Each structure stands twice: as C-alpha cells, then as structure tokens.
Image (cartoon, rainbow, N blue to C red; front, side):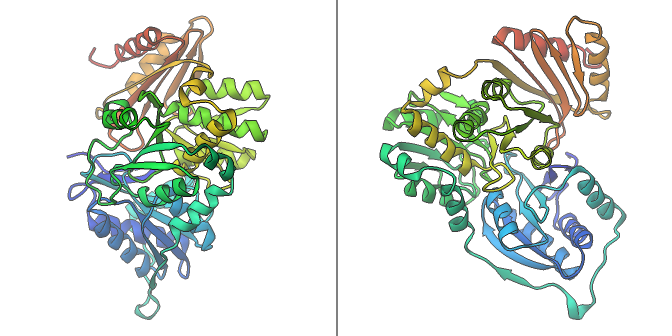
Length: 451
C-alpha cells in the first residue's frame, strides 16, 4: 500500500487505501479548527468518480466545526482560487489529485487570498490532524452548506480581462483541446469561443474516466498530436484533470511540452509589462534568459505552487509559475492556471503574427530531462548526501539545498528531491544538449545507495 502524502501541496492518497472518507473528514475538521468557527470555505472538485465521497467528508468535517461551506461543483483549481477571493471566504478546498492516476484523489487547501497554504500553515494543519485537536461545535451552531454555480463564468471573464481578445479573435485560430475528461473543459471551451477560436474538443466530458494517463507529457498526448495534424490546427492544448497545467503542441503536430508554456507566458507578459518573476528550482533556464533580456529578475523557490506563489507575492512579481506547464498571473489568480496560459500563448501568437513553431525556434534552447525512482524508507536523504560528496570541489559548482539538492555546474544543472505528491524521488537535469543532461542524470542515479 502506498503512503498518504501530506505536504505543502496538500494531501494525496489512493482511494479506499490511504485516502478514505474518515481521513478526509478529519482533515476537514482540522482545517475548520485552524480557521475558526464562523468562517466560510468554498469547495471545488475535479471530475474523478471518487470526488463526491471525499468532498462530502471534508464538508462534514468543516461544518462539524461551525464552518459554512459553499459548494462550487466540478470546477478547476484556479476557478476555486478565484471564488475563494471573490466570495471573501476564509479559505478554499479543492478535491483533486491533479495529474495522478484515477486510483488517487487528494485535498488541496487554500488561504483566504486563494493561494495554497504556506509551509508553516501546512505544518500547523498537519499537526492538528495528527493530534486530533478538533474544535467541534455545539449542535445548534454547526455550519451550513450552500451552492454557487458561477465559477466558470467569473473565471473566463477574469482571463479575458488580461488579454486583447479582439486581436486574438481576428486570427480565428483553429485549436485542438484535450481536457482529459477533467474539470477544465467547460470553462476553457467558453474562453476559446469568446476568443473567436474554432475548437476541436477532445475528451470534453467531465466524467473523470481519463482516456489516457492524465499527466500532460509527450507519451500521453500522441492522439492530440495526431488530431492537430489531421485538422490542420494552429495549435494544440492539453490540460490535466484540475486544469492548472498546460502542455503545447505546435501546428505541425509536434509536442512542445510544458516548459515552453511558462517561457512563452513570460515572453508574452514582458512584451507589455516589466517586472520580476518567480519560479521553482526545477524549471528551465529559459525563463532566466528571457528575464535577463528584459532587464528583470527571476526569484527561485523550492518546488511547490505555494512556495512560488508566496515568493511572487512577497517580491511583488508580475508573473510566475512552474516548468510543469503551470503559469501564474496574479491579476487573475495567484495559482497555476491553464486558462491564463492559453490566453497568453494565443495573445503572443496574435501579436507576433507567428506560428507556434516559429516562436519556439526563437527562444533560448535547452534540453531538460526528468526522471524518477522509488523512494526507499529513508527517502532521498542518502542520495542527496552522496551527491554533495561526489560533486564537492568541482570547478564552478554551486549547491542549493532549499529543496532537496540542486547542483549547478558549467555544463548544466541537476536537481534531486523527494516528490510532494507521490512516494518517489525526482531527478531532473538540464543542459545545452540532451546527451549532457542524460549524462548528469546517469551520474547522479549511479550514486543511489545499493548501486
């Protein structure tokens, strides 16, 4: 049985195994206890079949602590963030396991400003949950539940407010969108319609039965690539189940990937405004090059959306995100948002008059390789210690241990860390060519205990 993952990214586990209604209700009670009686919490969920059971359990825990609940239904994570702020709630909850397979689900907690809990707040929530220090209410003052059906409309309106919709509509882009039967299909189709796009929508029904492995990586999006070619579309977009990540396919049906989502979003933002940006340690150097050309700074953080968002807010950044296809524009929401990514990319294509392949060819080029390995009982600690000893003393080496260990070398960088969402160790490397990046990965993997 896999373990229950509890981190700054929230809670994730396998349904009926590590994540049960009892566990979910206790986390709801813990969040209600942390916020205090009389608060209001909005709850959204992705389309997984296990969603209603986990949502109901979390809501029960919250209401048992005299917290009112506003049910948003099946909506995206950024949509839930938006409504948390617009409804002036004390916090938000998203029932989602993001890109994890259908056997998993999760609980993501949001602050009143729509950002995921910061590290110290996540630690406080975990301590309340573990200790069972719940402040249950008297029977006459338990929380109440209401519903709000306006998330999609408000989300689309917020995204439209940050782009030149008229310029995009003039291009009449043909778009193929794969929503993986997740939570983002309805709102994204509405957005693309209002941007004047001709839409070919794959896997649009929010039924949670994923037609392929839901993480938007190259091996999972072969059908999207084929459909872009078949329909002679200008671009293909792929969302994950809670619609906070976005991958790109160019007009030739080539998978461009997720790293370029952030890079193009950064370039599009800096065309019109100047300001600092924030991203995590595992994100490509492309954003650093783009920022340097504009004369602005990039702040690096530990992996995790909440870590990026907290730094973005603290430094007054105008844009940020992660290399997994998650872009953050705080004018809409302070969390990753695939709808923002779509609008920024289409706006950039409209302004430049270029096709996506031309835009990509004009960006700094690096090869990034991402791999993973099982996490043993000691986690990544042994491998991290061995890596530091191995690379210590090399010319030009720099270490950053704020999240696992990132090792910067003249030839590139390699980063090893424990995952926040799965019981695995992630290893990523980037260099000017793939062979060098793969060699860095192999060199680090070879240091694992037992090798």
